[in-house]
Length: 336
Ligand code: KG4
Ligand code: ZN
Image (tube, rainbow, N blue to C red; front, side, top):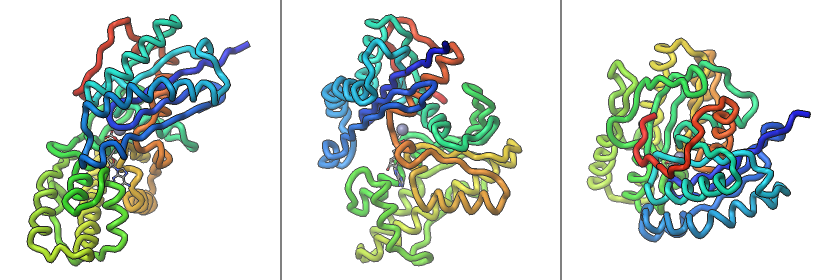
């Protein structure tokens, strides 16, 4: 009889400790997430050393919770996948050390996963799934990437941000407006009370004939607009509205270009910022207008989680690729 394979996934690249178990037959059978947001909020951003220490505190209890909620023992696990980068080095080392030790003790494979690739593959946890080839926009706190996806591990980078990532721009703008960390979702909330056309911000690189992005100038434009305003609550909402719209306009323009360039008719949008409702709405409208299909992970799998790591691990286990030796190696900077 065919035996299903179970992959334990561990995510510790930044400020969420995520653990999940993916079963090749049953799908996702357990997932636990511990967010460090309250820990970092008082500092207005992630404090790397505190993040590492908190991952150490939470990782083993979360693994135990996943095993017990799925009614599995450690011996039922066939492979361990962990985020090996990109991310904070100390935070990555926690997940890598625990993941590799777990695998070594049980004599099962350990699989190093690229965090942004896992964000991309998270969409495969949904139905319907996109079919290769497709174009992907990956938008997180640290990366903004447009990729032509030909298959698992077959990626061609079409464009990326030459400075700040979209999520970073959201977070910095939110901080300026006095919104708590992490600013992205808060800024989106604030924008709901804002009006179109009151504040005018640039759409950086929108007319450049390539798929690259730049968001640091937008951040400076936001700063100037804010400094020259009455700083009222309504102004902040109008500014939030215009900021979000500027980002969406630029993303859409570059997506259109990428779709034309690749000839793909399916688009995947993933990473933390893809949880943004206005962005999802605008992309759904674009898809209707252009007769293309757009796919997103469910919102909780857009932001960091263990499920996407477990699933990516299963993909590579199945392909018998990227199985580690025993060295514990992480890549804080790791090109896509
Ligand atoms: O993928 P992710 O959870 O972590 C990284 O890999 O960086 O992305 C986090 C980023 C943060 O910048 C956060 O503010 C942003 O995603 N984000 C959002 C929303 N939810 C998360 N930005 C805009 N609107 C949202 N709803
Ligand atoms: Zn992420």
